[in-house]
Image (tube, rainbow over all chains, first blue to last red; front, top):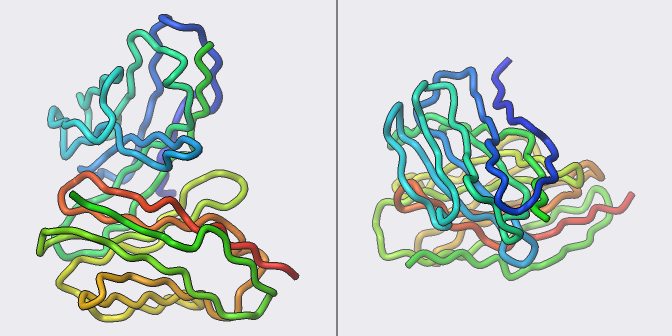
Length: 115
Length: 112
């Protein structure tokens, strides 16, 4: 079954305590990305990756890091979380062909609260 | 800069009605992609469609259809014979690179 898994689903943490949200896909997709969703601000992309060792900033990368050491995994790292990073986070993966329909698959979301 | 406008904040219909969700976009690029996503009350995000700017053919998938008109920079989404399970927030998005810009979403409520 094609899927994107994210862990944890829910996390409450404190300011400054490093955390990692994992994301893994089983479809051999090149393109993976992270989004955050906030009331009033909508969905915004944090980082994306076009392949192993190829990552780039999205719209709101400040305070986040990512890595892509294996094709299937794309973890999101918050080295020193702050309350303004309290949000709902989604990981996604897809192919990215120029003309195709390229179905995009999302993880179930991670609800993060930073106190 | 890219911009996506979903002017309808909330739409309320009765089951079996047809409903169209509007999406108007702005971009200076000639090559871009348009997307629609669904977010049901349970909170997950569901991909519905991706269209590239060179493909203006309308798309139909079951009760869903999409009308892409470059002349008016619109990519509207129609649900035919709506059902209660269609109740969700629907997002339109535009990408001229690998970074999408999302609209604010339209909340669709389908009453039985």
